[in-house]
Length: 226
Image 1 (cartoon, rainbow, N blue to C red):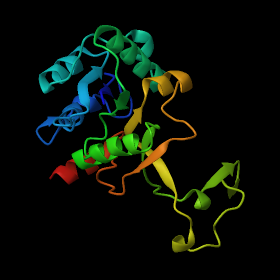
Image 2 (image 1 turned 45 degrees about the vertical axis):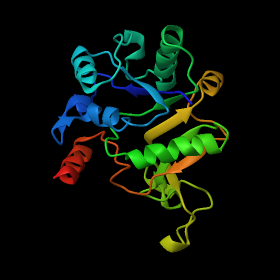
Image 3 (image 1 turned 30 degrees about the vertical axis):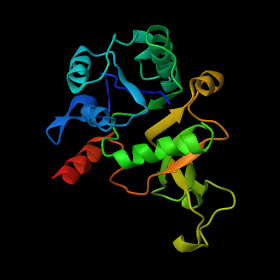
Image 4 (image 1 turned 90 degrees about the vertical axis):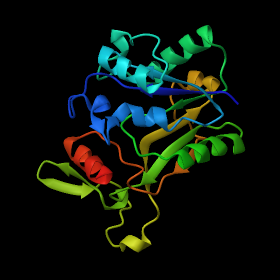
């Protein structure tokens, strides 16, 4: 099996400036996602898609393939991740050859383990190459959530669970962004990494599931390293 890893690392970030190249544990954040791919036989290349020259240089030094800077129209706040992935996939298959799957690793999930990577790839194989998406336990259960309408609040879910104890609530998970594995055919057909038949890759460790998106997340990451 041939898997192309894609790491999307835009240079701009409003909530946490330059988050992808900040130094975490003596190496740039983006390097964590490059390093975790080493030694996995299914991975044929790690392609870094960025619009930023400094990020490109750092990625190249860390061992990623950085053949171009991402087009401006795919580098805005509103650009879809699927479009970024399709741009990279089309280029790679034209220049380097066909792959069996594309694995999206967001650089802001630096603590995903190699064991989780292997588990995700094995799930993909075991389930006939159905899309695999990483999920984590929800920090706030949706049955306890509210929506606000002016000066009123009401349950976000009609059949809410306010009368239930936490241990009585059904398990709830959220997509954590750490791992998306899909065939090129499914990505092109759905124009998305999500589908109705996707397989869950459960990541139960809050440390491994951390997504660095805010200054508070950054402080947590630094504390974990320390």
